[in-house]
Length: 302
Length: 217
Image (cartoon, rainbow over all chains, first blue to last red; front, side):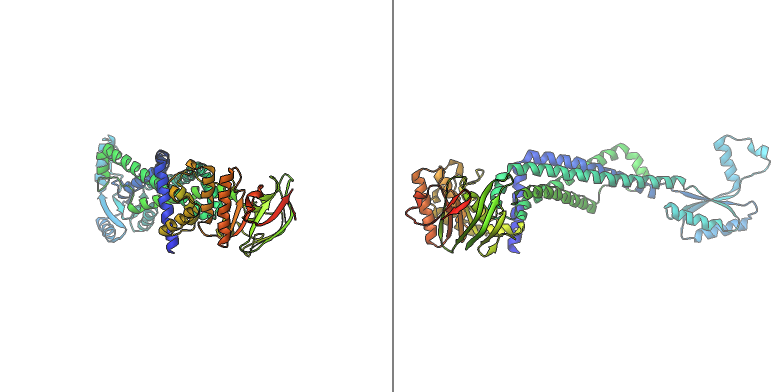
């Protein structure tokens, strides 16, 4: 166990010294990996913020209940009471038909409509905002309220919310695809770097094998090198995304503070940074493993 | 200690390097393998160290049958061997000390044990004062001695040396022979190939000769 641990530490130190010896190459690789990673990571952050804004946004989807013309003041009060008691309802506003007509007249310029119609054709209405913002949850609320007495029509303006949700879903799928493609690129970059390193150390590897080094002993420093490079790339992409976010915040300053409570865009959480780092380390490790193993296979006796 | 039974090696091109070779080397024996170049001496040594696999025949090294040896088990076989190469195979990107320490590092020795053993091995080949030098700065004979130090630093029971005196002046060659003699005296099983057996006359080892891949007795 102690010997195993010592081997790990020695291999790690060896990997560090390899980075130091090939500093420029290593830095350039870290840049490449970092830029490649910051595409999916950045898109992920943007999507996160968009869906965050929708969830707490001021333009949340609304449910409108139109009452029938037979509804009396008592009926209206009963509905008002039921809305108050419903756990799914966050708030509501009563729009009496006179006010609705006035709004219509002022906003559409149809000032003469009243005279021509003779009487107000508009119904009383409740504009309800639900506690849940997911479209399906609001649909449930609509189906329920539609059955209430004197509710002529319950209309949900959920189309846009659905479209946005669908858009975000597509966006997330796109990010996942991008992450996979660029993950493969990360493996390829590491593979190539390690291959070049192996060429520079061909003799050392050959002699080590001749005097009894196991494949895992030879592989180990390369694996640590690949993983380290991945982690550094992930850190760099984190910095890049944070910087972009800060610039965006300055540009959109007013708009953001109108839309979000904190007035700030949401960056990566600690757990998210850790998982990006872990994934990058894993991919770097994998690229190195493939590279060294394919070289070592050629050294085995046939 | 080492036993070869009807070993043949045919290369992909059809060239037959070894034909039906059977040898037995007992523990502590000094065996000199002679023959002109291309007679199959190097191939025989490589097969014993599992650097190449035979086309036919059986090989036992230290009680281990090499025929069924998995690739993953080869490193552990080689750790029981000391290999001396004709071209030394020293690494010029590090000091003499680090070259000799290599077999110990791959088996995760403690640092202070490494230092003690490397110095002992370098002392044995008379190069204790050159441990900080780069092998490229050494003469051919000194390089060969570093190679021998690396082969014995982990105290293997068997040392296989392929043409250790080739490309060396007579004086240097005799130094190397003396070194092998000393190893023989401490009980190491030795198999040395050479095309100039005369250097080893004083040691009077058992001599076997290869001709066109076959043993002549």
